[in-house]
Length: 128
Image (cartoon, rainbow, N blue to C red; front, side):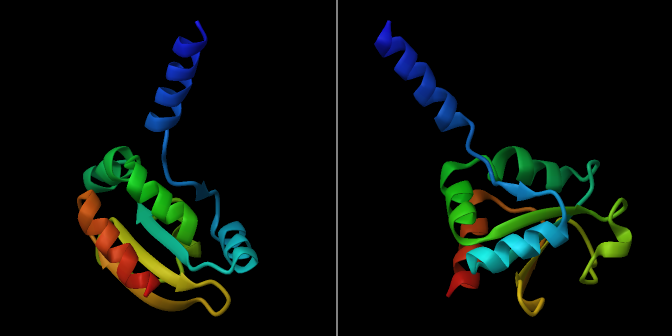
């Protein structure tokens, strides 16, 4: 019975990986400063197919979620709901902005949905 319980726990942990998104930009900025990490800001909407692909597939990938959670503080912003608070202009969604949290200086940006390996390449480029 212990083996089955441990196996179920492992499966739950293995399949529940995801990026830890902050609820709002102010809280994310404070957390990033405290942890001395850059911000990853994602612009999105609930009806965006590429945004939803990123959230349901790419962000659930163990390697992607671990890398992001270890190296960034992340926040997702709805371009309709958070319109007045968006710190950067954009031409499409999903848009990813990588930012120095202390200065709000843009370090890098990326546009569009992508697969896991491509997104990891973007993330690694920002961290260099």
